[in-house]
Image (tube, rainbow, N blue to C red; front, side, top):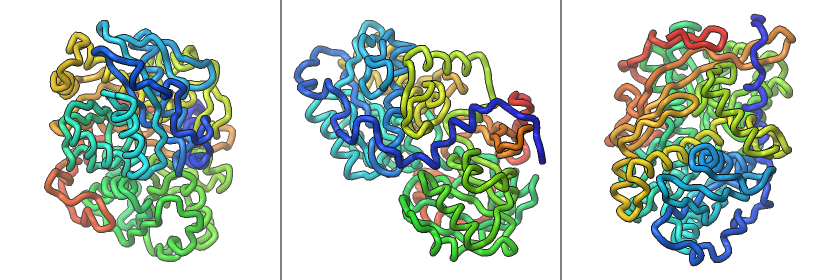
Length: 484
């Protein structure tokens, strides 16, 4: 179906899936910041000594600039800082202060999506460089590892960057670990309801990356699709970073055996997996496919416009055709802070900073930075008692460009989720169009998940009917405007 052409920001923003393996801008140097040399001894007093856990290697290594940039922009917009470089966020910021307390960047860590590497980096930032606040990490397994580290170091304050695994807050429950965004399951809220009750899907095959975020993303879809009456006929989990998906695609039922396919394959795997599907199963039919945040219009460059019709789960931001004065002001502030930024969304080529700012990797780190500043304001800048800052952060409701975020009892975000669909614009190109908003989704996902339930996995959750609080209550979006 041909739709009117929408703002094209989403096409640029979500190019990430096909570009995630691009190298980081600092060439893989784990120091990440000139101030690393001797920073632990140079900074004293009672100020905030901040370390950022970036992601400069591995499947999401192209997003190192994006991750660091989000925190830098928060400091520029809300703490009076200046970006240290006009063309790179990794160079950090200067002059940040909240409630009279200086915020010094002592170092930037280089993650690679593995728990071992991120633990090395957080230990370096905290135990060698003297960081007392950490923002990050980016990826799922990393988040679990850093949450466990935080639990062992109660005087440390950690605000997750954009790590979407469920366990880091729901199971670990470190009182000094905070996540001001949703998890991967929450970002798929509403998708199962739409596909079963609106699009008529009764059966589905699920293919997802075999690690904590892939498990969490698939778990949210399965819990809802089965909850509203659907059936999952197959669950296939290729390892993250797979390059040849042919053996995994062979395990999927054919297009005439299920009503549809749900994809939670990220990084460069999204395009590679879909290409393998075309080679084995035949041409795509967009209305038989749905995906998590890694589905995007740029898949059409390699796969053709047949991907139009596919539904896409949410992310930390809302789809690009949803605009408000607050969103416009936020994006403009990124363009004012730098001349250009390389990053995963742009294939690590210089691009308008607002391109990165509208994507969830950047925005998650921005949200964490704003939350830190607001927490410091509550305690009047006094960080001598970390528990007071932790209490302040736990009780915050933070007004952010894409909607306010409060925390649940496990210090994880309660958020609005925006769903979208890939459609054909007037010029025949595939664009992303917002279709619905699910308001105030929390980590329990309507009771499907809790501290005592198993972690999302290849087997959990089971496929069973359950109450889905938002079934039939999604807020439709018309021409980019939620009809609240």
